[in-house]
Length: 257
Image 1 (tube, one colour):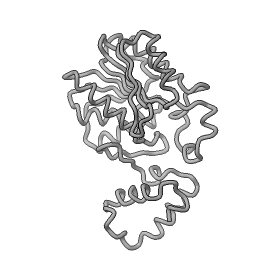
Image 2: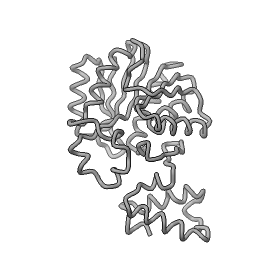
Image 3: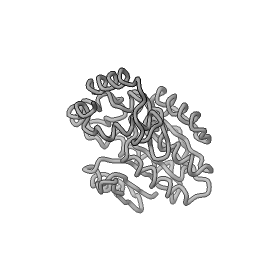
């Protein structure tokens, strides 16, 4: 049924089985035909499967997602894994997750480094409500959820780590994105005319809020890597490194104060 409407029908079928609490060798329960037909019709209209099912897996988290938040993607799992490895350098690091959306990064760090003190920010009040629900449902405490613009409100030299998957699509690129992506919040995708505006703003602001020896980790589009590497170096970051995603493409900028 999904082959006619999805570029990845097998992957989406796996998501449906997971949603139903089944593995792929189990037969589908009887009586699901009307539900599956409605699901396919919604997919045919371009609605992302994650919004239809109301959740998305992110590493070992099962997150509620709604049209108020960006759907977490495998590329961001690379950012989360690098962030956790770096956060473990400190017994109780002060961490900011900027543009938290569903809370994926903050909740993953909090689950695996419970001593970390994490502030997760977002401009969207509705996104923060989704993130708080995820925290309650997963039983993860220790994250403070704050409505804020980027790193505004943080004190000077107070953070060990800043992590963010900010919007990094340009206005021109947005017009040509697949129809499905237009169901996701535009403000979580589009940064501005160039697409790197928010990453560059975070690099500037992080210089003020990071402690000496602290670092910032930013997700980026592969073609943005060279520009943002040079931007970080020109701002005075000591060490700058680009991490690849699972496909080997540049995906995460790491810059040390």
